[in-house]
View (cartoon, rainbow, N blue to C red):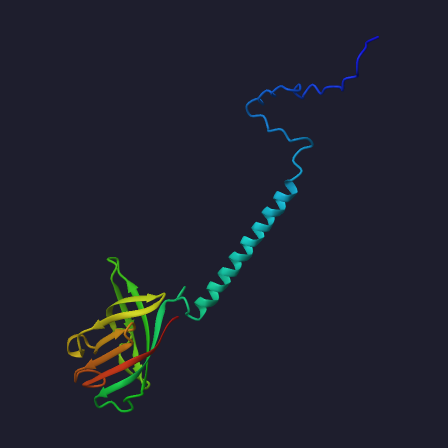
Length: 200
């Protein structure tokens, strides 16, 4: 018969009181603290919520960019710049053209291998084509659809290159056109103020 108090049973996997537990073997998983990791449902829930938020935001932003590009607000996917202008002065013999006449200028561009750009435009004023066609109306330029911008000029008249002398600067809202007596509309000079510049 043993005398004294009854000691509680010791778990062989637990360190003795007052001692430091030995380090875990290399590569062994950290102790679970008893009963395993019961927080994994929280991690899964947070991950799914973040994934859903990213998907939602991605679709939302893409949809917004597409909608803006359709009306030329950003120029994304645009291939030309459409300029509208109003004649401020005209000197020539063309009928139906004068101050207040509306001009339409759809402009496209190609970028060459050396990085320079060549623009093309068919400029009509009051329903009359004054500059450019399928073979004419090309000029060196700086062209952008986002933001929509065109700056360039053709310094020669029809006597030299079979179309008029053309100058456009959308940053200054100006268009100028002049030709000699060999031009389709005869000798004239025209200045116009740009009223809108949009990407299409």
